[in-house]
Length: 151
Image 1 (cartoon, one colour):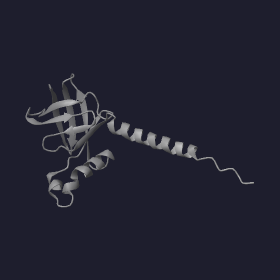
Image 2 (cartoon, helix red, strand yellow):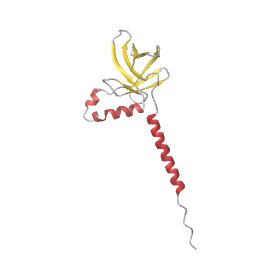
Image 3 (cartoon, helix red, strand yellow):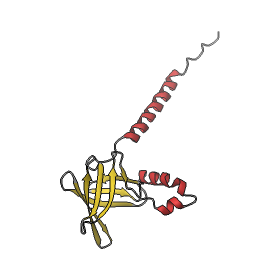
Image 4 (cartoon, one colour):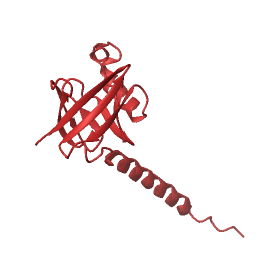
């Protein structure tokens, strides 16, 4: 007598498909999950609080992107009372023959992994449309006033 043929391995295939679908869903949901704090989302004007001089504008979005006109490659996140902002990619990187074409990729990967230079700034809200950032560099303490620009 011959032995019966073995049943097809549908169970193993089903497990592999389920794991692959779960992995894909987790990657996609992580990619589109909001990373920014809702209080910061919007366009802001930055002023030096000591002199009142206008410095720059910045736009913060729900994905944790901090966009400035000159240096668009920033990320931000919140840790307790600190606003953490990634360092910008300098123009020297962009002009470099080898690193230039890859500057945006290098900046996004280093920020995503939270490595490289990170700037910590203590923040405090003064109402919904005004934010104070404090940054200490050496012995000097910088104070920046951000005011929300209506859209």
